[in-house]
Image (cartoon, rainbow, N blue to C red):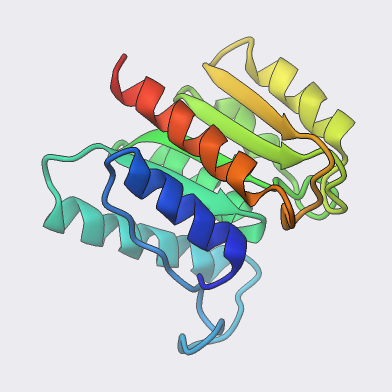
Length: 170
C-alpha cells in the first residue's frame, strides 16, 4: 500500500472527491497472515469494502487495484453490489487469468503502461475491445510507461482523476 503507484492512485481518488482506503494484503508489509494465492486476499478486499460501506454508507464505492490487487480486487468488485466503479492499474495479463472480467457490467477504467512487463499492451487492448461489447470500459495506455509508471506517475494520476470525476458527474 506504500508503493508509488498505489499512493498516486489514492491521491487521484482523493482529488476526485472520494474517501480512500489503502490496504496491504495478508503477509505484506506489517499485515499478519500469509499469501494465499488470491483466495484469502479476496476476503481482504471484502473486509475493506465492509469497512467503507459501514463507515461511509452514503458514498459510492470505487474499487481500484494495482497489479495483483487489480486481479483480486476487480474480481471481488464485479460481484459486489456496493461497488459502482472499477479501476485496474497495470493489469498483469501475462501472470494471471482475467477471464472473469467477461462478467463485468460496471464502468471500468484500465490504466496500463505501454511497456508494462507483466501485461502485454496489445493483449490488454484486445481484452478491452472485447469488454466494450457489454460494458463501459476505457483503456488509457500511458506512452513509454512500464509496470510501475516510473516517470509517468502524473499521467497515471490524471487519467484516474479525470475518469472518476466524469463518472461521478454522469
